[in-house]
Image 1 (cartoon, rainbow, N blue to C red):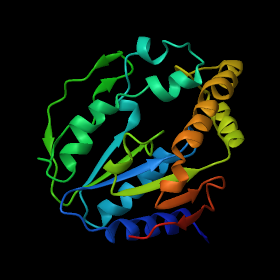
Image 2 (image 1 turned 45 degrees about the vertical axis):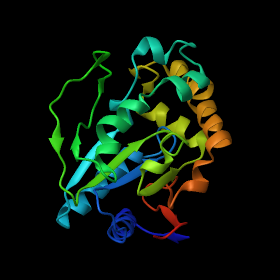
Image 3 (image 1 turned 90 degrees about the vertical axis):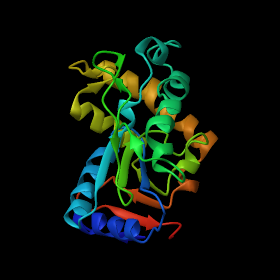
Amino acid sequence: MDHGTRGELTSRLAEAIAAVTTTHPLRVAIDGPPASGKTTLADELAVVLRAQGREVIRACIDDFLLPRAHRYRRGQYSAEGCYFDAHDRAALCRVLLDPLGPGGDRTIRTTAFDKDTDTPTSLPATTAPADAVLLFDGVFLLRPELIDRWDLRIFVSVPFEQTVDRARDRGTGPTGPTADTAAIERSWRDRYIPAQQLYFATARPTDHADIIVYNDQLHRPAWEVRRPR
C-alpha cells in the first residue's frame, strides 16, 4: 500500500489509466460509499488528465436516477429501496456505457434524468473521441449488472461512521441540503449505510476493484493497486 499527497494519488491514477489499452474510449468507474470523496477525486483526476492532453468525459450516477416515486416506493429510509430502486442502470448502459464500449458508435448522453425537476432529460447526443476517458463516479457501480462495462475500476474506501460525520458537516439529507441534523443521521443510518452493507454482502465491490483508494485522511490518502493491467 502506498501513501502520499492528493497530487501523488492523482498522478498514480493517471498512470494506471495510461497503462490500459482499449480500442474504444476508456470507461473508468469511481465507486464508493456516499460522502467518501468520489466526486472530488474524479474532478481532481480530470484536471490531471486534461493537462496531459486527454479528452475527459465526466458523468455521475446522480444523473441516472429513477423518478422519486419509484426511488422511495419502499419508503424514504429503505435500504433496499436505495440499492434496488434508485438508479436507472438500463439507461446508463444504453446512452453512455455501451456506446463507449466495444462495437459502440460513441454517440453518448452523459445524463438521463434531472433530479431537481424529477423528469427525464432530453439533451442532444454528442460523439466521443475514440481515445476519450470517461470518469464516472457514483455508488453501486461494481454491482453485477454493471461490473463488465468498466475498463478500470477504482473504489474509494472510507469507514461508514466517517461518512456520517462528513454528511453532517455538509448538511446533506436524503433530499438535498437540510438543516435537520436528525434527518441526516437517520438517512445515513437507516438508508445509505445499510444499503452499502447490502452491496458489500451481495456484490463484494472491493474484490472487483483494480485500485482501492483509502480516503479517510483527505490530505494524506493511501492507495493499493489490486489488479494492475
